[in-house]
Length: 154
Image (cartoon, rainbow, N blue to C red; front, side, top):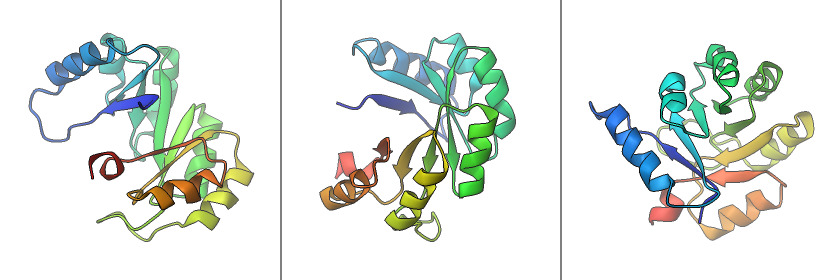
């Protein structure tokens, strides 16, 4: 079972209602950390553990922290990771590590290792993690964790 779960839906007109249902489901699992995508105030209102911000929302880190939320922010460069660390984020997703549709050039495992030498943040590897050998490769980097959809649904 995952330790962190994220509600993310870019198309529903019922985002708040669906997020509330997501939180109801999460309440059935002890110790799970629940995150809402992009919406700081909503995450606070419905009692989520935290918020997962996009790489264009660095300015929202401060407000989320003021509300007592854990903050994970999407990053795609070493500079963005270091900025997230300076601004007080708790963790980052760093992507894409492997080939992932429409996500740009993969960073690769060696780049991930270099990043981990530069920061103290929790880093979740993301992007193209679909096979067990992908997980084995990123585990060797000592990354905090990984995030994936296709790995769990394929």
